[in-house]
Image 1 (cartoon, rainbow, N blue to C red):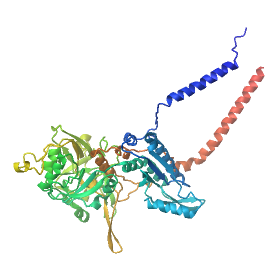
Image 2 (image 1 turned 135 degrees about the horizontal axis):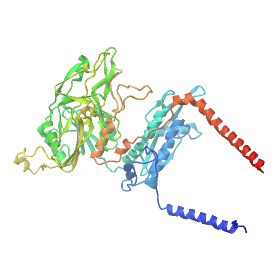
Image 3 (image 1 turned 30 degrees about the horizontal axis):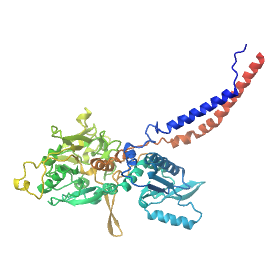
Image 4 (image 1 turned 90 degrees about the vertical axis):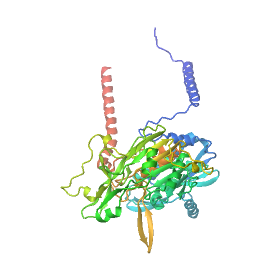
Length: 590
C-alpha cells in the first residue's frame, strides 16, 4: 500500500489563507512599533541625538516649517547626488518632526516660458540665494549650466530665512566637482537643523566682544562674528568702570587684550561671573613683535602684564604661564628669503583635542605664539576643570624672555632640527585651553570696604551662581587674517575664514593641505556655555564618501568591462556543457 501524501486542493487553500492571515496580523502588530537600523560605519543614515530632540520639540516648533528647494532640473551627476541626499535627509527629519516639516523641489527652469523662468529666478535671487554656473564638457564642447543650490524657509506663513547649500559662484570644467558634492552632502544635516534652529527661536541671547583694552578689532574677529550672528545678538561693549555695563550680556568674549585691566573693570567682569555670566578669555601671556620678526628675522617674547593673571584667573582655577610652546606638529609660515618660501613654523602648533563635546572630531586648531595654561586650586571642588586643547607629545616650552627667530627652522642639508620632547607623552602635552564649570569664588572677597558693601545701589556677591568659563592662552585662535588692498585709490580690507590656510597650500591631489577647526571650536564653546547643544555634535559629524579612485578606474576599465561581459557568458556556457553531459550520462544509464 502506498504511503504517499495526496495534496488536497482544500488543504492548499487553507494553508494559503493561513499564511496571508499571519502576514496581515504581523504587519498590523508591527505598525504600532517604529525602528530604524543604520548599519553603516559612519552612521550616515542616522541623525544626531540633539537634532532629533529639536525636531521633536513641539513647544519650540510651534507651526509648520516649509522648505522650497531650488536644486532641481537638469543637474550634473554629482550635483544630482546632493539633491538626492538632501531629499533623503529631509525624509529622515520628517520621521521625527511629522507634519511640522514639509518641503517641495522647484525647478527654476521648469516652465516653457523663458520670461516666466527669468522672473522666478529674480525672485529666488531677491530671497538671498546665490546661483552657481557649472562648466561641463560634452562631446568636446564646453557648456555652462546655471543651478540654484539653495532653499527658502517659510515659518508661520512667511518666508523668514534661506539656506545656501554651497557658496561657489562658478565651477570650472577642470575643478573637483565631486569633492564639492561630498563636502556639501557631509554638511547637509548641519545646514538644515541650524536653519530650523534659527527660525524656531523665540528670542536670541546676547554675545558681546569686550573693547577698551586694545582687544582685536571687529574685522579681526569677523569670521566668528559671522558664525554667531545668525543665532545670537552680537555686540561690542566697553565697561569704562560702569557697574551695569554687562547687564544685558549673556556671554562675554575677551579677545587678545593688550592693555592692563583697571581694578574697576575687573570688578565688573567678576560680578558678571558671580551672577552667572559666561566669559571666554583668549589671552596672550607673551608679547611678540611680529613686525620686528618679519623685517629682521628675530624678536623677543616678553611676559605681558594684563593685571588679571595673578589674582582673577588664578582664583578661578587657571594660571597662564609666561612661556612659549614650540611643536613639531605645526602650521606653515612664509619666509621672504631665496630658496626658502613656505616652511614649518614651530611657533604655530596644531593643537590636539581631548574627548569633549566641544572638540570631538574637529580639525586641528591652529595657534600662534601660544603659552601653556595650568590648572590650579585643585582643592576647590566647586569648580570642575577640563583640558580641551593641548600641544602634541613632540613639543617643548621656552621660558620668557624667549628668543623667536627664523634660525630655529632647519634650512639646508646640514641644518639640525630642534630637540623635541621624545619622552612620555604626558610630559610634553602642555594644556592650552581649559573649561571651568561650577560655582566660582570671587577674588575681590575681603578687598572691598564696608561702605561699598553696605550700599543699596549694588549687591556684591562673592560666590557665583553655577556658570562656565573658558580660558585659552592664545588670542590668535579666534583671530582671522586680514588683508589690505588698494582699489581705485581706496584702501579695502578683506578677511580670510578661520578654517582656511591663508597661504593656500595644496596637496598633490589638489586638496587643501591645511584645514583648521578654530571657528567651530569657538562656536561650539559658545553653544556649550549657553546650554544650546543642538549644533555641537552636528558640526563634528563626518560622513566618509567612499568614491572610486579615478586613476585606477582609467587604468583598469578595459579589464573590468571584459570581465563583466565575458564572465557571465562563460558561466552560462559552462552550465550548458554541464547540463549536456548530465543528460548524456542519464540517457546512457537508461
